[in-house]
Structure formats: structure tokens, C-alpha cells
Length: 425
RNA sequence: GAGCCUGUAGCUCAAUGGCAGAGCGCCACACUGUGGAUGUGGAUGUUGUGGGUUCGAAACCCAUCAGGCUCCCCA
Image (cartoon, rainbow, N blue to C red):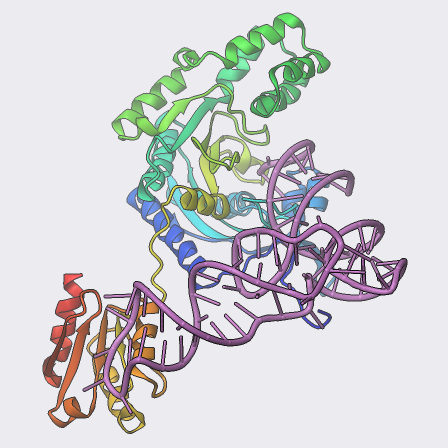
């Protein structure tokens, strides 16, 4: 259709039902973060492209960000992530902030990628970070926040788990195998791909990268050793703290978790749905020691993670964990008996609203059957009718839509009767 | 950026070159002062869009847009 303008590829339209889910997730991430005392913040949605170019590859910025020139000719971009903005904000007020700083945010981000299931060009992301304390116990707290969220939405440990590794531990293991520094990035990518490739092809790929057979064998030993964490003092303390925090059932050690190399320096972690169709990580994070110094601040260690709303929504849906959708926020519905009594109904609805209730009123006279059907669709809990009989006696008919019981009560006591019904549901 | 698959009623999908259909949902009525259940009836439509082949195209070809799968990437 020539004159029908489509939505921009990869953007999302939140109809009331999707909006309710987004707000549900927002409510749950807020509850998890606030339970641990984290403060909410946000950064700009538009940033100078240089903020990302400084740290990321040029190709990355050019290809995967929504970049454009503003009216003055400056290159700006819709933010693809929050961490650089956050680091700048922390660095700018480093001298006046109280540390440890515990901050969280939930907002929109844009990445110019190929839309697929679980990946759109516009998404919401939850970011949680702590600055100013470099300890395994602080890492454990971030994991506990993530676990609190999973628990909060009903994702039990058998449905979703967080897998933890430590970059320093892996580095020392790679040292022991005499893997040279310039090969670390390749090896890291190799590890990342292990779950995606067939065993044979993965071996071939490893040898192609220039690993000796002995190094490959050693690497496979490491990646298969799920007791490796016992060698790491950091991880030993981490798991001890997790136990005290009551979330150890959610967290498992996994030497296969690498999470790229960009700025993680210690603990790294990713959460996965244990038996789902979405292979993507549902959240991920880790410790970064150098980020603040990189943006011009004094050295300050941080630990944090991020979670996207798109994958989370799919996971919740596939696990039957979506909250019931209530179309109308008004639990009380007032019918219009006929044109001559419309004002009567409007006035009564207004009385109820002044009493503190959310009230939905049919906007015009219609068959009561039609109006009740509408009330049902809106999942209202109480319907009130003012017909000629009721009005003559200064009474109203209050119907409990859950059980179908209706009683005619004095107009003055209606508010109380309705509140009682709502409280009983 | 590359390869492959898909696009038909509001939704899920049939129809494989010959009259565009079903289920669910929707609307009306049974029930002129009351929803969910049931029954009866009714309307679903530029077959994503544009072009081409053909007597004839939802189907075949080309282009384009969107969605999905994979590679790439994943800050």
C-alpha cells in the first residue's frame, strides 16, 4: 500500500498487553534492585558517537549503531549500551559521590542488527552496577540481585541458572598451557563457540588457530573441569558469599563462560534458560577494573550486569510465567441504562471516583447485554446499574461479576459495598 | 554484510495453474433490566507490495518490503 507507512524495521509497538508485560518486567527489576538498596538513574538516550568509538571497534560503531548527523553536523547516535555513559557520569562526580555506589537503570537502547527472535533493533535493558569495592563478596551481591529477579518472576533454579567464571583464573590456566598473549583473544572466541559447533569441527578450528595438540587437549581438560573454581581464592570466596546470600542454588561454576574480552577483568557470568528455545544469554555481566580510568576518571573498580527485555519476555512466555492481563485498570463498571439516565450514571461513577475507585463507564446508552459483555472483556470485577427502579428509590444495583450475585443497595452505602467485594477477591 | 524459509479473513492455517476455504474470534438474534455457557444466522479478503509469464496466477518468474532460521556480530 503506497500511502501506508510501516513501522521502522526492528522497532516495537507496545499494545496495551505488551505494555503491561514491559511494566511487569520493570516492576520486577525495580523490586530486585531496591531490595538490595540500589538507586535508580538514567543517562542520555542520544550520545556523541565518539563515546563509543573510543572504546569499541570502528566497524562496530559504523555498522551496528543508529548514527546520524544533527542539525549542526555533529555525529550522534542512539545509545547502544549504557556502560560508557554510566562510567562518564561516575567519573564526573567521582569526588562527591558516596562509595560504594549501587545504581540501576531500565530504559531503551538501539542497535542496528538483523532482527530475529529475541533480538530487535529497539529494546529495553536493565543495568545494575556497583562501583568502588573490589571484592568477591561484591560480585556475589550482583549475582544475588540477578537471582532475586529470576526468583521474583518465577524462574526457579531448574528453569534458569547463572553460570560463573573468572578471567584471572582462566588467564593463569592459559599461562600454564603456554598460550601466548596474542592468541588469548582467539582462544576466548574459540571457547565462546564451543557450544555452537560440532566437536570435530571445533577441534579442527582450534588447530587452525595455531594451537598445538597438547594445548588443545589441555584446554579441553580445563573446559571440562567443573571443580576448577576450587583453585581460585576469588571464586571460593564468591561461592561462600552466595551461600550466605541464599542464592547458591541459582549459581554454578562453568569454565566455558568467557564473555568477550572488552573490559571484563575478573568475575564474569551469564544466565541461561536451562531448557528453552532461546539459546541467547538472558543476562550477563562481570567485573571491570579499568573502565573508569579509560574514560578519564581515577581508577575505580566496578561490577555489573545487563538484561534485555526481549529475551526475558520470550522466556517468561515459554515458561507460562506471564502475568494475567487485565485490560482495564478499572475494576468497577457502571452501565448506562438509557439516554434519560445517562447523566445519573455519570454522576454516580464520579462519586465512586471521588471515593478512590477506578471506574469505567459505558460512554453511551446500549443494550445492557452488550455493556455487560464489554465489562467482562475488560475483566471488571463489579458492575453497577442505575435503572428507573433504583433511581426512584435512590438505590443502585451492585453485581459481583466473579460470582454473579447482585444486590440492590442504598446509593450512600454503595461505595462501601463495592470496596468490600473488591477486597474479597 | 551473506545464505535459506515464510507472507492468504482480526488470529491460526488450508487451497499447487481453473468459482479463495475451515476453525477460533467478531456481529446479530433466541433473551426488549444483566456478562462467561449453548443454539441459529451473518460479514469476513486489493492472497504483503509492484511488475512479468499465461486463455487463466494465492500458486510460476523478477523486484521490493516485513517476519523467521543460520552465518557474522553481540559494546
